[in-house]
Amino acid sequence: MCPPRFYRVAYVINPWMEGNIGRTDGAVATQQWERLRAELARRAAIEYAEPAEGLPDMPFTANAGLVHDGTFIPARFRFPQRQPEVPRLTSWFGERGYRVVSLPSGGTFEGEGDALFQPGVPLLWGGYGVRTSLQAHRDLSELLDIEVIPLRLVDERFYHLDTCFCPLPGGRVVYYPDAFDHDSLETIRVRVPAEQRCEVDATDALHFACNAVVVGDAYVTNFASPALQERLAGWGFQTVVCPLTEFILAGGAAKCLVLQLTHPGARRPAAAPRRPSAVRERMVEIQGDLLDTGLMNTLLDCITEGGGSFEIEAFQAGLRHDQASLARVRVVAPAPERLETILTRLVQMGARVAEEDRDARLEAVTRSGVAPRDFYSTTIYPTEVRVGGRWVRVTGQRMDAVVVVDGRTDPPRASCRLLRALTVGDRVVCGIEGVRIHPTHVPAAGETFGFMTADTSSERRVELAVDRIAWEMRRVRDRGGKIVVVGGPVVIHTGGGPHLARLVRRSYVQALLAGNGLAAHDIEQALFGTSLGVDLKRGINVQGGHRNHLYAINLVRGSGGIRQAVERGLIREGILYEARRAAPGRRARGARAPVHSSSRAPRWRALRGSFPRASPGPRRTAPPDANPFPQPARMTSAR
Image (cartoon, rainbow, N blue to C red; front, side, top):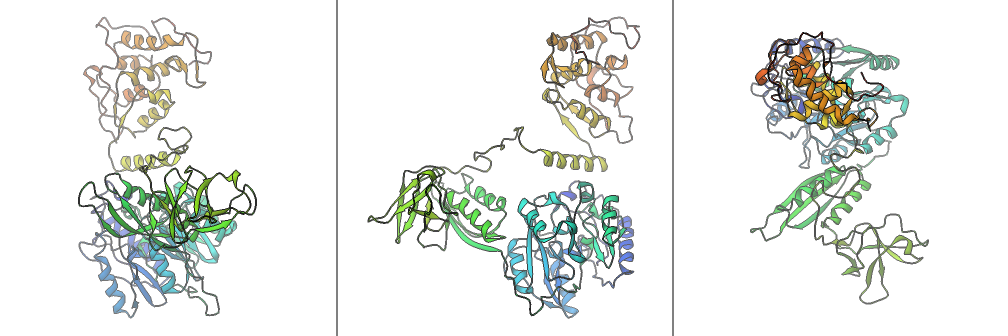
């Protein structure tokens, strides 16, 4: 461990640090760290590294490197702010007799944050996709002679594996499923039986419940819900909660503050067979207008979205805008199958597998209308295949077909053919070896055709985006920040009005920027349950409901304004109602907003001119519930 003498949030290298620069309390952080240290000291021996001024993240010692059987493998940090920590901590281990071995590849590696031993087993879980590269896990497997299981992280809030995954003795694991991609979740579920897995929810995950130090039967963490504590108790673990809120401001908690020096049982028995790393890599080359067209970005996105990582070995830009650029990229994937999938997509974008001067692999059809299992699926772009040492242009080019090679002619002929047209004995191109594409246009990221890809598609899952926005809003409110909502009538049309009103009521929103439309539709909904005469609950037009919009406007005009309509009790719910209540005692005239009654309160800026104001007249003396205007068309269930 490393005392937090100089700890603070001084820069932003993860989402948790956003908005927290200068907000840490050094005294509170020291108290929280000391309590964690005391709990651990009762259960284990602790050694300490001296902190250094100017290195505020040194207390997060889990990222310093990885220790295994007397060997220290130092980190290779992605961000320059943390890189000066490495020589200090490397010297610390060298002075104490550890063998220091650096990773041979050039990939990034952030220590035990992304490399967690399964207690009592020669098995290492490796996180990648945000900070640590896949190459590092391949190197660890070879250096330590143990099996490494790569898990891809897909949520930047969980940028290290130890923020969302905790292995326990007895082959058990605690983890947050939404932090991983589909293939990684399948890997966990295949390797760990259901009765030994504990999947936590967002509440536990966002309070760093998985970022725990396991010592004996103690599970030491910042937070644990009753459900998690009950599950751990059923496994024989005692939950020890040590609040570490000051460190969460920087994106870390209990496990981040501890680097484990011993891992009993982590050495592979001599009699046990060695499992080679499943990580595979290939070099690809691509030539063309890589910069202006965005093709380079599209290629790299294709690699990462396919679950791989990359190293740019060389990039030579054209000297003029009409000259082609050339890139050599090393593609790394966690398994041979995923590498093949990624390479297939890259080949279809015009890339070429660099080491390949081999002919295309041909397999014979054994059943009419059925291609070999790993057939090459064609695109609309001109294609060549290598047969007998020469490149042959494919004829009849079309999408979603296979390439059939007729070797009885000289030169050989290759053509596209539909699956249903295949006959027994046809030789079909399989895999990507010996295939070359000449794309006339490569879609940019997000441009490719596909279902549910439009930002506004109702078929897309939006829960993840909503969850992320909600998390950001909570953090802004907790640090006393302000949130401005820019809204239009679509908020009401799509049923979002009650939800935005609730956010206003709960002090999540401090300013609303909108025109007449939002106010008019919101008040129509509050009065009649419709928007432009459409019943928002049933999605149907109300007979005569088209007049509701005008009745709403007229009611506000007759009241003298929105404020007066709210004060008289004519408007009793909705966004504008909540906005008015959030600004009590201030005049609506001139669009000035009063101070919110809540202690968090920021100033509300009311809508200016949302309704044309009627000429001033004598103040009405009707009772609050009175409505001096004609009754509009109503639903039978109207309020």
